[in-house]
Image: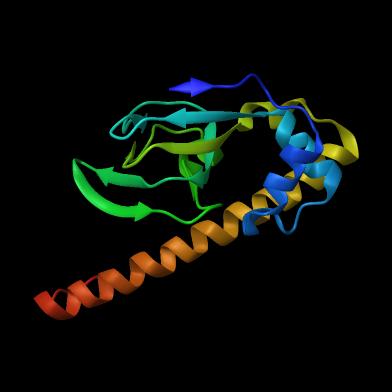
Length: 163
Protein backbone atom coordinates (compact mmCIF):
# COMPACT_ATOMS: atom_id res chain seq x y z
CA UNK A 1 0.00 0.00 0.00
CA UNK A 2 1.08 3.53 -0.74
CA UNK A 3 -0.48 6.40 1.16
CA UNK A 4 -0.34 10.16 1.34
CA UNK A 5 -0.05 12.23 4.49
CA UNK A 6 -3.30 13.61 5.89
CA UNK A 7 -4.92 15.74 3.20
CA UNK A 8 -5.23 19.50 2.95
CA UNK A 9 -8.29 21.33 1.76
CA UNK A 10 -7.59 22.41 -1.81
CA UNK A 11 -9.70 22.63 -4.94
CA UNK A 12 -8.54 19.27 -6.33
CA UNK A 13 -9.29 17.36 -3.13
CA UNK A 14 -12.57 19.21 -2.58
CA UNK A 15 -13.72 18.59 -6.18
CA UNK A 16 -12.87 14.90 -5.84
CA UNK A 17 -15.03 14.61 -2.70
CA UNK A 18 -17.90 16.55 -4.21
CA UNK A 19 -17.97 14.15 -7.18
CA UNK A 20 -18.96 11.27 -4.85
CA UNK A 21 -22.69 10.99 -4.06
CA UNK A 22 -21.97 9.99 -0.44
CA UNK A 23 -20.73 13.52 0.22
CA UNK A 24 -23.80 15.36 -1.12
CA UNK A 25 -25.16 16.16 2.38
CA UNK A 26 -21.87 17.72 3.55
CA UNK A 27 -21.15 21.46 3.53
CA UNK A 28 -17.69 22.72 2.47
CA UNK A 29 -16.48 23.15 6.07
CA UNK A 30 -17.56 19.60 6.90
CA UNK A 31 -15.74 18.31 3.81
CA UNK A 32 -12.68 20.24 4.90
CA UNK A 33 -12.86 18.50 8.30
CA UNK A 34 -13.17 15.15 6.53
CA UNK A 35 -10.13 15.86 4.36
CA UNK A 36 -8.04 16.72 7.40
CA UNK A 37 -8.68 13.24 8.86
CA UNK A 38 -8.19 11.41 5.55
CA UNK A 39 -5.42 9.99 3.39
CA UNK A 40 -5.34 8.65 -0.16
CA UNK A 41 -4.35 4.98 -0.15
CA UNK A 42 -3.33 3.04 -3.26
CA UNK A 43 -3.49 -0.76 -3.37
CA UNK A 44 -2.25 -3.25 -5.93
CA UNK A 45 -4.52 -6.03 -7.19
CA UNK A 46 -4.78 -8.80 -4.58
CA UNK A 47 -3.63 -6.62 -1.70
CA UNK A 48 -5.55 -6.84 1.60
CA UNK A 49 -7.08 -3.53 2.67
CA UNK A 50 -8.99 -4.65 5.76
CA UNK A 51 -8.51 -7.97 7.55
CA UNK A 52 -11.39 -9.71 9.31
CA UNK A 53 -10.85 -9.80 13.09
CA UNK A 54 -8.45 -6.84 13.26
CA UNK A 55 -9.30 -3.53 14.91
CA UNK A 56 -8.81 -0.01 13.59
CA UNK A 57 -10.79 3.20 13.12
CA UNK A 58 -10.46 3.63 9.34
CA UNK A 59 -13.41 4.08 7.02
CA UNK A 60 -12.92 3.75 3.24
CA UNK A 61 -14.46 5.45 0.22
CA UNK A 62 -13.69 3.81 -3.13
CA UNK A 63 -12.26 6.32 -5.60
CA UNK A 64 -11.51 3.85 -8.36
CA UNK A 65 -10.87 0.14 -8.78
CA UNK A 66 -12.70 -2.86 -7.38
CA UNK A 67 -12.92 -4.23 -3.84
CA UNK A 68 -13.87 -7.82 -2.91
CA UNK A 69 -15.50 -8.14 0.51
CA UNK A 70 -15.18 -11.58 2.11
CA UNK A 71 -16.47 -13.14 5.32
CA UNK A 72 -14.81 -16.31 6.59
CA UNK A 73 -13.09 -16.61 3.20
CA UNK A 74 -16.36 -16.47 1.20
CA UNK A 75 -17.15 -13.63 -1.15
CA UNK A 76 -19.95 -11.36 0.08
CA UNK A 77 -19.84 -8.69 -2.63
CA UNK A 78 -17.64 -6.74 -5.02
CA UNK A 79 -17.65 -2.95 -4.86
CA UNK A 80 -16.84 -1.03 -8.05
CA UNK A 81 -18.69 2.30 -7.99
CA UNK A 82 -16.89 5.50 -7.09
CA UNK A 83 -17.88 6.62 -3.61
CA UNK A 84 -18.92 3.20 -2.32
CA UNK A 85 -18.14 2.86 1.36
CA UNK A 86 -16.65 -0.04 3.28
CA UNK A 87 -15.18 -0.50 6.74
CA UNK A 88 -18.05 1.44 8.29
CA UNK A 89 -18.98 -1.10 10.95
CA UNK A 90 -15.52 -1.15 12.52
CA UNK A 91 -15.21 2.61 12.27
CA UNK A 92 -18.61 3.42 13.77
CA UNK A 93 -18.76 0.68 16.38
CA UNK A 94 -15.04 0.49 17.24
CA UNK A 95 -15.22 -3.28 17.05
CA UNK A 96 -13.10 -5.87 15.29
CA UNK A 97 -13.53 -6.05 11.54
CA UNK A 98 -16.43 -8.31 10.60
CA UNK A 99 -15.12 -8.96 7.08
CA UNK A 100 -12.02 -8.60 4.93
CA UNK A 101 -11.60 -6.32 1.93
CA UNK A 102 -9.18 -7.01 -0.95
CA UNK A 103 -8.28 -4.96 -3.99
CA UNK A 104 -9.42 -6.88 -7.08
CA UNK A 105 -7.69 -4.44 -9.42
CA UNK A 106 -5.29 -1.59 -8.74
CA UNK A 107 -7.44 0.50 -6.44
CA UNK A 108 -7.45 3.94 -4.83
CA UNK A 109 -9.42 4.78 -1.70
CA UNK A 110 -9.99 7.79 0.46
CA UNK A 111 -9.23 6.41 3.93
CA UNK A 112 -10.71 8.40 6.82
CA UNK A 113 -9.61 7.90 10.41
CA UNK A 114 -12.79 8.36 12.43
CA UNK A 115 -10.67 8.63 15.59
CA UNK A 116 -10.09 12.27 14.66
CA UNK A 117 -13.81 13.03 14.82
CA UNK A 118 -13.31 13.22 18.58
CA UNK A 119 -10.86 16.11 18.10
CA UNK A 120 -13.54 18.37 16.65
CA UNK A 121 -15.19 20.70 19.15
CA UNK A 122 -18.44 22.59 19.72
CA UNK A 123 -20.77 23.32 16.83
CA UNK A 124 -18.23 21.98 14.33
CA UNK A 125 -18.31 18.55 16.00
CA UNK A 126 -22.09 18.55 16.33
CA UNK A 127 -22.71 19.54 12.70
CA UNK A 128 -20.14 17.18 11.21
CA UNK A 129 -21.12 14.33 13.54
CA UNK A 130 -24.80 14.69 12.67
CA UNK A 131 -24.19 14.53 8.92
CA UNK A 132 -21.61 11.75 9.24
CA UNK A 133 -23.71 9.49 11.46
CA UNK A 134 -26.79 10.14 9.33
CA UNK A 135 -24.81 8.96 6.30
CA UNK A 136 -23.65 5.87 8.21
CA UNK A 137 -27.24 5.14 9.31
CA UNK A 138 -28.47 5.30 5.71
CA UNK A 139 -25.71 2.95 4.55
CA UNK A 140 -26.31 0.45 7.33
CA UNK A 141 -30.09 0.57 6.83
CA UNK A 142 -29.68 -0.17 3.11
CA UNK A 143 -27.34 -3.06 3.85
CA UNK A 144 -29.75 -4.43 6.46
CA UNK A 145 -32.57 -4.31 3.87
CA UNK A 146 -30.39 -6.19 1.39
CA UNK A 147 -29.48 -8.79 4.02
CA UNK A 148 -33.12 -9.19 5.06
CA UNK A 149 -34.16 -9.74 1.43
CA UNK A 150 -31.46 -12.40 1.04
CA UNK A 151 -32.57 -14.05 4.29
CA UNK A 152 -36.20 -14.14 3.13
CA UNK A 153 -35.16 -15.75 -0.18
CA UNK A 154 -33.02 -18.33 1.64
CA UNK A 155 -35.83 -19.01 4.09
CA UNK A 156 -38.20 -19.74 1.20
CA UNK A 157 -35.74 -22.03 -0.56
CA UNK A 158 -35.00 -24.08 2.53
CA UNK A 159 -38.37 -23.68 4.25
CA UNK A 160 -36.66 -22.29 7.36
CA UNK A 161 -38.35 -20.46 10.21
CA UNK A 162 -36.84 -17.50 12.04
CA UNK A 163 -38.07 -15.60 15.08
